[in-house]
Length: 257
Image (cartoon, rainbow, N blue to C red):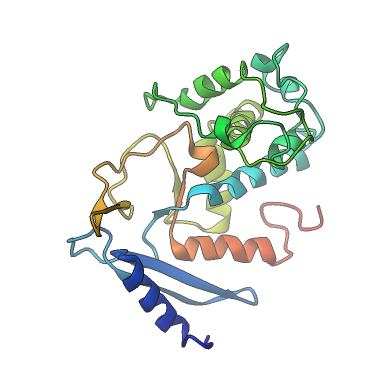
């Protein structure tokens, strides 16, 4: 792969130097294949442990695509109605301000929940298995900032609620469902869902610090925010997921759905 700025490797090397990132991993998907998967640098500044294409990184809001896929699997199984109200599945929403918000509206960020509401801090995290349930119990009392379908606005709240929906409908916690129904069938063997535990194999996050990059001290993961941003995946595993999404073959979801 080449272009006016040089080869892909040239662009990656230049971008890495400019950003100050201690390490990165990347993979290329081309016509259903993964011809390139490689990595540069180290998992943590001043470390000697090299990043590989199998090193898990926090993939942030790309995680929402896994939550959406899980919901659509349950729709395909006849367990969820896209146009059903959230209170049809989550009793806590009955009689509450967002009771009639539909699953489709949550998926498409047209529920009325705002970006600000989705970024609200939840400081009472304990890491327990009921973390997501407790978070969503509290969200049931929140009045959306807008009427459903009034506007599109990105909100993590939508996917927190959808994560809990997956738990209630499937009878499994979010982590177990996504691992069994998506990660394992796709072959994402070096990936996992945030489970409240620390994971030493992950690449360490860094923040800008007086012209350098300072590593974060804590590698713990957060169960409550997993549906919005808690899938941790390697570059080659993300490429495998992308291949599956593009190949038109029935694997984890009907391709004609």
